[in-house]
Length: 104
Image (cartoon, rainbow, N blue to C red; front, side):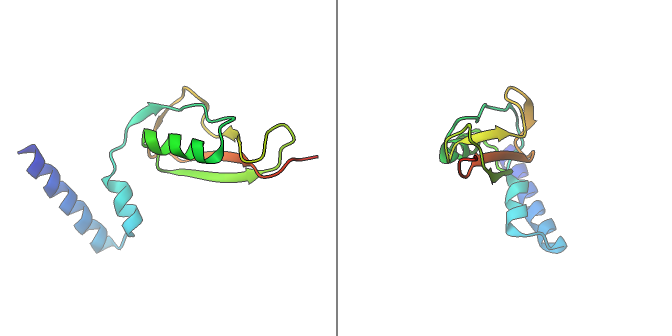
């Protein structure tokens, strides 16, 4: 019974998106279940490793920005917008800054 209710709700969600004109990406985000998790420490990870960690945990609304740094190796995470161990929803926007080249 729960399965049928879930399917009916998903169909209603898709229909509502079609009527209001939301994009496929927005509809896909709506289908994802939101969980509240502890933010991991990403600092020092390579870019692909950090993205993989966020994906693995279920975070899908993250942005990657690049900046120069003389203290961090190129391609590694310099900082993150949400401090580690902070409880955050998987839908919350997370920014991750990656070292693009060494500063002077």
